[in-house]
Amino acid sequence: MLKTEDQTGQELISQAIYRNGLNLPRIVKCVDMLTEEELWKHPNGSSNSIGNLILHLNGNITQYIISALGSSPDLRERDLEFSSDRILNASGLKELITSATHTAASVLEKLDNTQLNNTYEVQGHVMSGIAIIFHVSEHYSYHTGQIVFLTKLLKDVDTGFYNGMDLNKKNSPT
Image (cartoon, rainbow, N blue to C red):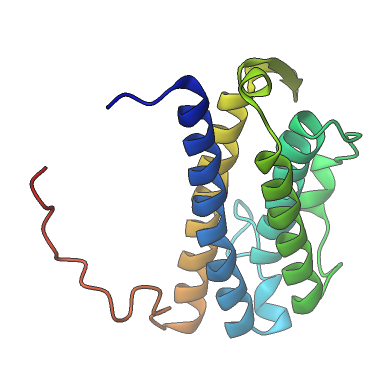
């Protein structure tokens, strides 16, 4: 059975909230494993610290979803996300990314199909609401992967995200 346009839009929003929500506890778990020094450690001159990545994710989520789709003022100062060090401790970083994730979910829950199909200008790019949602979800996952990788590199630990799950289970025929 084909879904209606409204059902498809709601499924997109639901999946974006779900997928973005999967990243949040992963980031929080990584932050909890690290010292304050490790959170702001730059692996080399071309790489960002975990703290900077969290500031950057907050800026991206805020600019694209909360500002563009939620019609809030765009207050992002992107360069500060990469130049600022130790401006927040672990607790502050967790609060920042948690607040951005939850606020973005609230904005997404209120969107309708017209807003999904409207175009918005963000960072000089003209994008549909759908494109913004895809961008933020992809961006969130990308940098979450970097945070997880850096945490594993610094701590030599298994994060245990998939403990108790059978990831070798085969697909069921439809």
